[in-house]
Length: 392
Ligand SMILES: Cc1ncc(COP(=O)(O)O)c(C=O)c1O
Image (cartoon, rainbow, N blue to C red; front, side, top):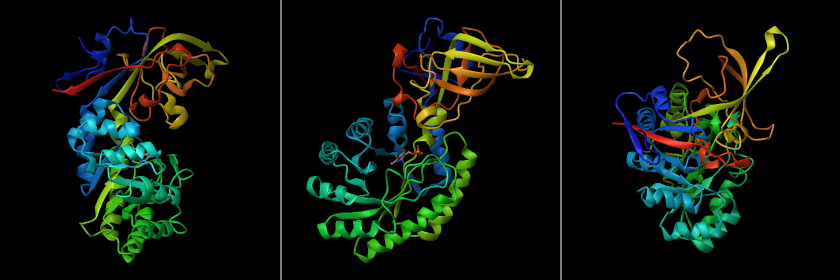
C-alpha cells in the first residue's frame, strides 16, 4: 500500500492507473495529488543540457513543498526566496546561503534581518527606499538591481509591480548605492511568468549589458546576471527554443565566463511533477439542442483549492478520464465545477470527456505550479492530499 507523507517508489514508469486503483479513493473526501519527484531530476537534466552556463535558482513560491525543495537542493539548484520562511525552508533542505537569492524587491525589515542572521547576502532591489532600508539594516548585502523588461505577452505579467525603469531609474539606483557605500554585484529581470514572447529574454539581456557597463564605470565589479523566470512548465520544445535565444544573447553580450549567470525558474521544474485526481460527486446534463448538449460535473477540488491557478495563474486546465480503457467512447463537451457554493468555482468549460458518472475520476496533468501553496479549504472542502513517488 502507498504511504502518505513518505516517498513511495516505482520500478520503470509511474503507473497512474495502477496507483489510483490501489488507493481507497471511495473513502477519501479530498482530491489526490500524485507527485513524481523523479520529474525534478529529468527537468534538471533538461535545464543543464540546454542552458549549461546558467545556474537555476528554484523559485520556492511556485511550490514550497518541503520534499520538492529538498529534492532540488540535492540536485544542486540554488533558490530564489521571497520571504523569511522560504529562506528557512531552503536552508533546512540543505541549501547553502551563497546559493540563495532574496529575490523579493520589497522586503519587510524582519525578513531582511533574518537574511542577515543567516548570511544570505544577495538581494534584489528596485527602489531607492529599499536601498535605504538595506543601508540601515543589512549594509553588507550584495545588491542586484531589478529592472523592468516585460514580454509582450505572458500568463502572469509582473512589471506593474516590480522592476525599476531601466533607462530612467536603474542608473540612479546604482549611483545611490555607490554614494552609500553599498555593493552592487549585478542586475536581474523577470520577463513575466509563462512568457509567450521569447525574444523578450534577448531584449532584456541587452539592457542588462548596458547596466553592467554603467556599473563598471562606477568601479563596481559587476559579476551576477539573473535572468529570472518565465520558462514553460510542460513544454520542453518551447524551452529549447527559449534556450537558443538566451544562449545566443549571452554569448554575444556576456562572453566573459567570470560573470555568473543565474535564473529563477519556478513553473519549469514543478508543473509536470503533479497529476491531480479529482472525483465526481454530482452531475447535471444541460439539454439545448442535439448538437450543443453539455455535461456538467462537480468534483472534490476547485478554484479555492488547487485550481486557484485558474484564477491567479490564468492556467488552462487539461482534463482526462484516467480510468477509461476504451479510447473509442464518444466524448462530450464538459464543464467541470469545483465543490463550493460559488459559481466562480469553475475549473474548465472546455473539456471533452466520455459520459461520466458520480464516483468516476478525472485526471488533471501538470498541476504542480502555483497550486498547492495557495489552496484553501473554503466552504469546508479539504485541500488535496499528496502521494509522493520516485523511481527506485
Ligand atoms: C521574482 C520571481 N522570480 C521567479 C519567479 C518564478 O517564475 P516562473 O514560475 O515563471 O519561472 C517569480 C514568479 O512570480 C518571481 O516573482
